[in-house]
Figure 1 (cartoon, helix red, strand yellow):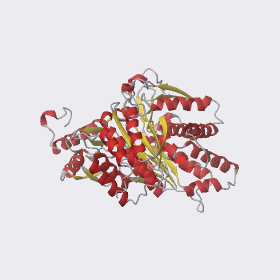
Figure 2 (cartoon, helix red, strand yellow; figure 1 turned 180 degrees about the vertical axis):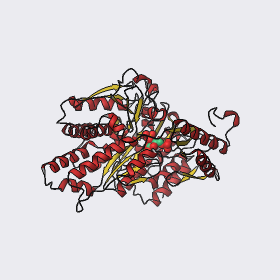
Figure 3 (cartoon, helix red, strand yellow; figure 1 turned 30 degrees about the horizontal axis):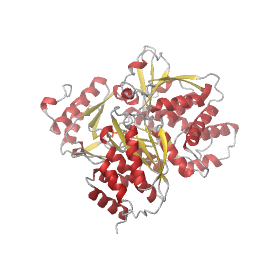
Figure 4 (cartoon, helix red, strand yellow; figure 1 turned 45 degrees about the horizontal axis):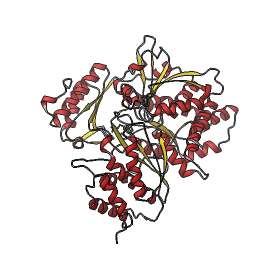
Length: 554
Ligand code: G16
């Protein structure tokens, strides 16, 4: 008898209600499934089933499901699973998620499910628990409905965290699985704000005046979370929130948000009359897991402080605290290191490499998180796009907790380090937690935003998207810095780079149906020229229609 015989009825009903339409193809990529929101109901039903099975295979621990398409346009949506410690889904399950989503019929789906349950030795009798949330997108509610039917089909107990940020959902999953106390989701979310804001206030207790910060909330869920955080922060930080129109769902990420700023290297138009020279501003993305800082210099010129600059500031601050606390001597030595991707500006990598170990990994928080945890006692990781956090290994946390300072200055630094750990959301990149960390680091390093900016000068750079027929034809190696397929293309890029100078790489996006081209060079015009030449090569190599070739590709 089939292991699924007790479930077939519900599965059949769900698959009839949410069929895969002819021609649809889904893939679990860098950040889960992501595409037009209206096409995702069948995927959500199956993700509900997969999440329940993941919980069963983890002995009944709570699994998270987040419905969001983050920085992508308002009409997109997506979904990703969160593992019990709040980290991204184990990569060995990703291809199964893709197989589930693409199963064309009930029979095909049941066959895949049975095979999967057998190969993973999942006991269907184990209870399943999930917690789920969504961002503010219009397609969210109907995707939630499909997801819930997937949970119900497998008998999972589901907790609704409603509309909240991606990093809060990750935090919830970890907290639910580690708390020994009775909980309800509202109390846990309150606990999140209390943990961050209390540590922040202690760290800034001796600052007389409150700093002012302008926040571009991308018209997304970050607006709701920032408003809540503001209530908890009281007078310790004065926030001015902009782009908070969450009800006008079509405005999400539109001409605002962290990706708009990072890619365009410019201020959202809605902020031009708000930001005064020297004042700090920052942008969140649509689900508040990315953060980009900026300011206008004395001449009114826009200056951006991206994930690389945040890495530099935060790593310097933490290294100083470790040293001042006496945790860098031979016996207790805590190793601080940094993880970046190929997108890291060459100047940042040079600056950081002269001061601490630096590792380069492929794009995607899961890769950075893993490397930070594996390689360092304290791993600082940020993608250039502003997505990142700091991880403290359990041995580092133990050393910090048990260290006996020998001077008053050491005791002060140690106390700060403990509070810094509490300001950070270690489960995943968290724009609001990262923002508090930046504010704390600036204060304790006695840096103005200009001093921070001047730690190193970014090499001019450009990011270009190329629409191709099949982005999977592009395969990379060496942490995405080189192409192995299509054959011969890397040699052409090498030749171009040799002639023009600079650096460039090409990789398929994991969240959009495009190939991304990055280039940097000593001069802005050279960086743009290199990016557009490589984009032209990619377009032609991928057999792009000459009539549709973007006019600016060279
Ligand atoms: C997601 C991932 C990030 C990645 C970004 C872009 O961010 O979580 O790690 O950098 O996509 O990925 P790609 O270049 O492959 O499209 P988010 O903020 O959209 O969740």
